[in-house]
Image: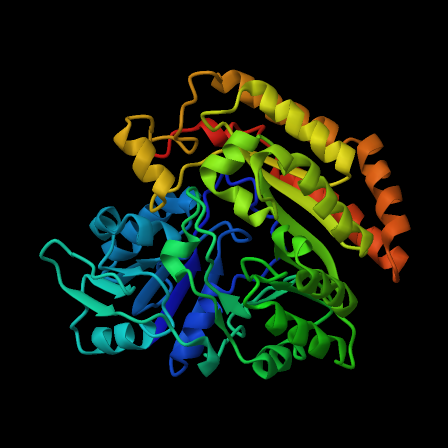
Length: 457
């Protein structure tokens, strides 16, 4: 069967052309059902789609910001008689809306669903919904196939990256899946469960040994949780034994610093080549940290000590020679426009790369459910929560100033000097990496096209 797999992206997404990471969702699908002819299209790097290219089946992976574009793409293929399946976080969150634009919708993880889907396509028996979740799904009278257990990652599902025609700076790999934190603004726990599932360490290391110089570990936190510290310690020790030295990046939380074993994980991660950690700090407003649940991943026991403890934990990571960026979502009910500028000053003081965005309340989260019931959402806009204390035009001005000041030559140089003195080895290589990283993050913060405030429909 001729299968086209697409990673959808909005034409105005500020990350288009700046994302150096190979998407992992498409290679996973091609790996679990290998006996077919696959074509990959990554719209973060490609501009056009040849809708007349021969295809028997099209699968589209959809993020929140790409929903409208994905529906447009689906419509073009369906006009030509090609069956289209939508999956990814956005269709999983709004399946009843997504099914209006596709022949079928995948909800949740696809490793165990995709082979079933292909067999059903061959038999001309495609269901409306394919679901991987322990919670029964009500399809409203439509046909549903459901698997009630999450994929067992220890089975080492194969990954096929070969259909990608372009080179990516970073290969991507995942060692664990699932998150027990369950922040109210995040859909990860609902999608992947609260228990952390682990791949066999030997399989992860063997896969990494096929990579080039850089890779991205896409686990929810590469520093682990209390019940996975031993796992990550062993993983990083094994990576360090590989003959070829590699540099890698990942997402991380601060709570590991508050645990002696977690500190050892961070130290081993640095030794194994961790060069950069993207830390989801989310807010420096103690009230927001507490109400959202993000305080639990900051390594903080109470809101009163939040900021000082966060600073202490960041310093520990930096002292290991790891570059830190701080990712924040602002505009919550407890925030004002001053929160934007205060957050920038916090980042500059701590020498972390600022990644500051207006809050996007994602469908499928507890926060979306609450604010929707309270009538506080406008889902026709990318920034769908209107804080009555904050005007759109003020946010737009703040975001421009954050980018201009946060990534000015002066601040870039300050961070370069700071981290150069922190690096334990490969100082020149890592400094060049930081120079490129600062440019890429700054590019992703460009709001010159008013991306954040345009309507989605």
